[in-house]
Length: 253
Image (tube, rainbow, N blue to C red):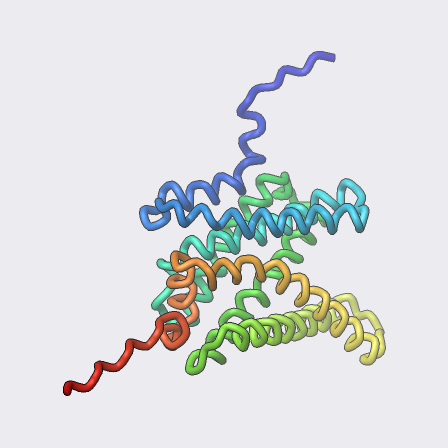
């Protein structure tokens, strides 16, 4: 059997990465060599993900589905960091909705890249799981920014981000589990439901925090991304930590 292959047959599989490249090339504020640092956390998380996949030994079909979820999430976070100058200095609710819209667009690009746009149970499940990850992640950032709006410190911010990310996951899993059990009319003891919610919320919260951590290190270490990050979360007290106080003038003799 002879199969004729054209180079453009693989173009749809590049949709997710094309969105990331266009976010750098087409946006004037990102035409800066410092913007390329966004690939550092992306490479770190990709390496960790490849190690995790080998350890778990997923079947090929599941591995492809989880790849779509993971790379849609990580590329989406990268694009949020690149668009921080546009998302920042707005109402918190508006910033949340715009960030959610960006993640939806990236998720669709990921579905195109991995051929998950067809209406099947597995495709719908993959997109639903991606939504379960995205919404608590963004909500965790919003809650942490609101909590640390008056007194920002790096260590306390990272700790509160872990707390609010896990809390948002627990609440979202509780809501989703309640809806699923109600629709399917599954008679499960409340203690079992709470145990499943606790375990799944902790696992997903820890997973999200590990994924976000390299991007947070970049945001706190790079002045290019730090300014955008603080603007998005309305952390007005950033100057307390990032800028040293000037020395008082010496008294005249």
